[in-house]
Length: 463
Image (cartoon, rainbow, N blue to C red; front, side):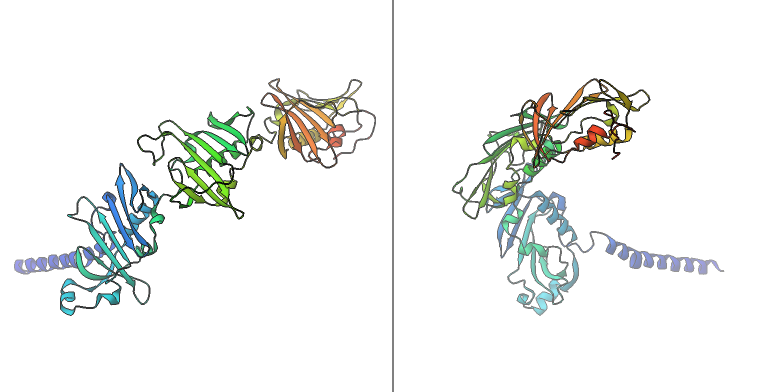
């Protein structure tokens, strides 16, 4: 091949390669880019304010001190999640095709009313530092197939057929972008909580990552129940905020919350009397009740009934009602007393077996039955806590567990036909519970331990 022919072939190949890259591959890559066809200009993460006008109303939102606030029609915290959703929608809002370019508009002068752009359903204006001025998006009607929307942007008078990502904004009201929760602090950042309900005040605080009651009782509580209470307080949400306070007709329910060190509500302003905490009041009014709540950083609001009902608790509701604070393998001895019968002592041997003893006799114990009964004891749940009191002199069954660390658990049952009472030691105090009368089987505890013959000479019935 001659040298000139080789040079010509190389030139042709280079030209073909350039065409394939710049004419085919690069345009395809551009179309695949997330930025391709995007109508919203600027660095969207740097937007400093929004103004939204719809047939539902107009409202303005601005970023102040690293938080989004609603500037008009009311001054309040904006819902940050809604702003993040809006910015994400702007990023996805793209042209499907250009219906009329600038030149075509000037030449053909189409009636913009047919696209809904003469009186747009939505005007969205935002400011971003790199742009010379506010950037506006006008959104008109949807196309006949309801798959796209007609739109214009301030950077060009062209008419676009665009994606539907911003279409939801046309139906948004100002209150849809307002922060409706009465606090922005998550329950994990609560350090203490006081509930005043039903005329009683209950106080809790976090200690070693667990909720404990500090008043009116210093007794173990159902940690999960208190955690759920704290979570429900953090999620109290207004259905609508009120321009003036409602007329009260019932006693308030009040919640006071303290936050962990360094945590504050996003609504805190200079001069806040409780910058590291929260107060919410609740009440209901009317024969068909309406429920209201007010945070110390929010106006009065109408709320759903369940927010009010969630807080109608007394201190006794939170007291621990389960008895699983011991492990079966740690039980070394069980002392049983049934009125009219000899006291029985069940003892775990070094071989991890059991013996059953009275003052007169000793027999091998039935390990399976004993540990099944202990399992049932751990699984008991009382119906409700009653009071701090000592066990009665008349009872149906008394038992004391001696554990490996020499500590004891005492359970005294008073069982009647329709109801039962349990007396036990909880948090170092004697307490009384209401229980179901069938929560414990006295006969099972009394006779089910001995493998062959019970201690009074009767044949045991294995259960």
